[in-house]
Image (cartoon, rainbow, N blue to C red):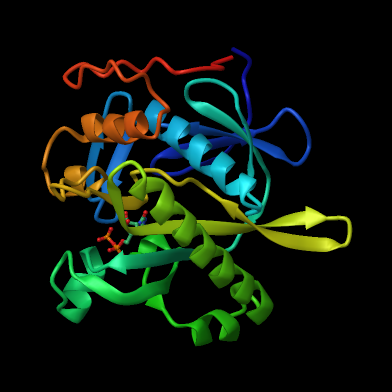
Length: 257
Ligand code: CDP
């Protein structure tokens, strides 16, 4: 394998320079972290699953007109993406109370929210990604008002689509976190969806049993983390049905080049 220039290493992914200008290669690691990286582990196969799930979700979103950074999957752990300037916001969309919202507002986990809620956190690991208001975003210039309008509209559209997509395979989308970036264009730039959408960044509960099929299995020591991610991939039709959950078979349905 040729040596590539590493651009950035995050908690669960590495970015390398891409083959052409304006592209990057996004590599999905098996590393899992929680509570601002105070808790760490390596989960065999997680990177492969997240690469596949994020590819699937980004392709579906492109189909409904959401611009994303995804170009194509390169192999089991890597995808080619468009290079963007990441907007330093974690955009969280919630349908059901869970996690920090439950703690902060004293709403029991699992309580359906009166409407979908979009929240913003500042992407700053050293500060623990603090919750911020729109006013902070404008005052400090993290995004403009028109960029934020687009971000909110895209987030709600993504939420609607993903609720239906997961709902169709018996999974409730409780909440999720997404990130956006600025893509350079001939006449300026446009805001597109970046990063990943996977069980690392969503809360996904089985509709019948409320079983958690996401990273809370790791955060809360519930066990069977990759088995749960495999379940999500299988239900979405990404992995073959004949999985033995005690030994995840990461073979794919089609077009693994
Ligand atoms: O996950 P945690 O309880 O710390 O925070 P949250 O604000 O309740 O998270 C809402 C959603 O965003 C969950 O689906 C998290 O998995 C996701 N999230 C994320 O992917 N990355 C973060 N840095 C924070 C939240």
